[in-house]
Image (cartoon, rainbow, N blue to C red; front, side, top):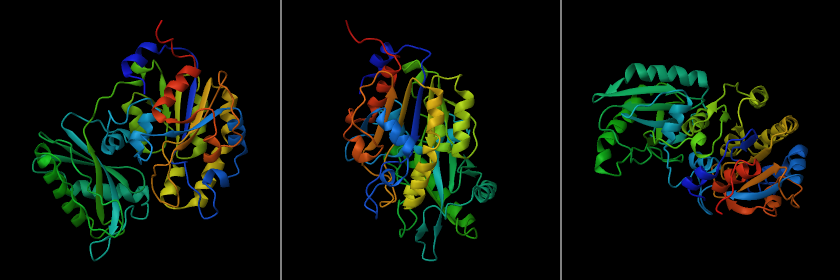
Length: 402
């Protein structure tokens, strides 16, 4: 990807507008019906858009590397995900409106279910209702306020997710995840990757033990899994690097947090896809870059629910004419990473990508699918180059060199 100092020198502010529509986890592999979600879905508007676009496939990090949501999105936003490795905890904390200090170590938590043998049977506690999550977090906060002089701050997210911030001197990142990432395993405790993180590991492991004791009567949410231990990294902002006035429309905290981290204005919105598109319409005149995030394609992929993933794609398709009526200078539709329902998790497969603007060479792609996009004019390319393509097609970059 192009170096930050070069992109900073080339970008210029303009009135042109860019919309980046991210269907989280949209990439797929053939399911039981021998088709991907995009191949199965009835999506005439997305297919028609593909026929007016230049298409390709993107690798979020590198071919064969399965990315987390953080690095996958950073790539789309024009940041090197290897240089900026951001723990999920920071993103979740910022996403739910928490303010982090230099003494804070944040992590993302899942409420989970363990059986009598102490084995994890559900990593998401049945996708716990958010209202129940809030109640349980209050109970935990009342009973675990401090450990060894370190303040413990617990805040609910959505469904089974929550955030824990450990606030105190001498806390360092560099810790393994306290999450085995699969069912059938016992609770996992964190381990320090350096001597500097030994205090952090001790505090966190005490918290896990205390939390499991507090939650013993709260089935199915009777234990916790923690991951993404991190401190605030201090990234350069999109307004500085790319001369953009960016806004984000998202319903899940993690993605709001990521948007805040790179300097986007997070626009308040409701919980539905329709709500998100209404917010786009209402705020279209006020910003020149919009990141619109659709979460449920990823959620249903992780659940192995192929049919519901297809339905979400079809629902999004109905709103494509509304975006086109806004007449953005650049419209991109893509995914951050692939989440095949058959794998029930993120994967290394590249993501379908299409870009519409006045200045493209329209290719031969006629449908928005993985197998069609690979034939597109952009070929297969690093997701870190996606923003440069958007900026160029919005005429937001000067010539490089004499």
